[in-house]
Amino acid sequence: MSYNTILIAKKAAIATVTINRPNKLNALNKETIKELHDGIKDLAEDSGIKAIIITGSGEKAFVAGADISEFADFSVKEGKKLAAKGQEILFDFIENLSTPVIAAVNGFALGGGLELAMACHFRIVSDNAKMGLPEVSLGVIPGYGGTQRLPQLIGKGRAMELIMTAGMISAEEAKSYGLVNHITTQEELLPLCNKIAYKICGNSSVAISYAIKSINAGFKNTVNGYEQEIKAFGACFGTDDFTEGTTAFLEKRKAEFPGS
Image 1 (cartoon, rainbow, N blue to C red):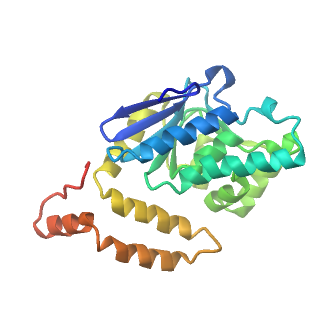
Image 2 (image 1 turned 45 degrees about the vertical axis):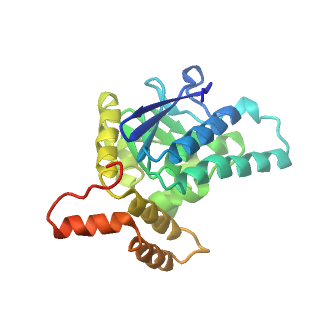
């Protein structure tokens, strides 16, 4: 499948999705959101892909926000629909994907860009990265999960301050807050992401999918995370990956999971 706003490259069991709107600092519009959904959905259905990396083209921005020109004249009804559909087809979709998704933040991640990075399972950033949710400076609030995921990641007080001031934080501040896992140079950003992705690919993809589901359950008020963990833990015992993993351990050899 060909796309207008994203690029997809596959190497071994890892796929890299690049948002490719450099003249717009990779801002998210409806077309990009749909293409990200379609591309990532196809990758998730590819049994040969065990990890996905999302990044932005160029050296300035991961995603510098949403394309404001697209919704500046929206009504209340249209605004609500925009947020609901975006969350459904991309942000919630990525968060709950059974394939691990790593955000490689290579510059500005603002508004919808930070919301996209937060929807990924974890974040690795270049040392020039700047992150923030500036929506209140436009008379609106984050609409793609930012008011929910940011407090989960950095705490309520810090999230309140960052959202209400419409400010930006540096890569170092983001790491100290627990928003990102690692900081590296632009040149080493994708190599580091790939290094971590390769480690992930060596483990049971079935167990990882259960782990993602169980971890996410702990952040949902309507779900008992401990019960979800117990259910998923038990389900692992019925998988071929469990048989291979435990047999390899007892035989003192490295496990050979499908695709690892």
